[in-house]
Length: 208
Image 1 (tube, rainbow, N blue to C red):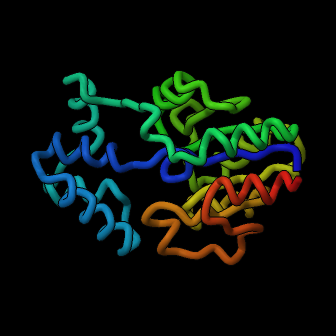
Image 2 (cartoon, rainbow, N blue to C red):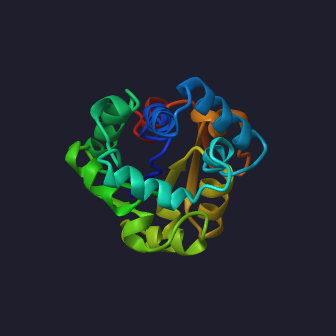
């Protein structure tokens, strides 16, 4: 193994505040928004469908642009990171592995993550690359971006359909993280590894 590349949402960054911010924008209680997100994900839908339930016919992109214009757009802070993120990424880098972060977010999120000074060698988003998961083009870009042959690159994510299956189809190795609504309610038996935390993953990849 030469490289480990991490998904962002519900792998490194919890989405609790993200959806609480949407709840405030839409004028509903945060627990209602969370319940709607869980319901649509359980039915195999897109989490953005929760916004359309609250505001039928809404153009989610237009709503997001309105939020940004009102100064309520993209935001990340230390408390949004899962507590195992920094120590796990640091342990992997200290062991000589190249650590990358690449997920389905707009280009601004890459800058916000860089502002948190995470122990990573490179950070990228689908918005910056112009391709998004689960498109094979996203994982082909990961394979070109991270050092090593595809079989020497491990992609870590919580979503079997968006992360694990397409990464494997492109020849990458995979680790399914049982975290967040999707990670905890789905399985990925085809993954090379299944872990309950990044601490567990780091220990498996860097045995002492």
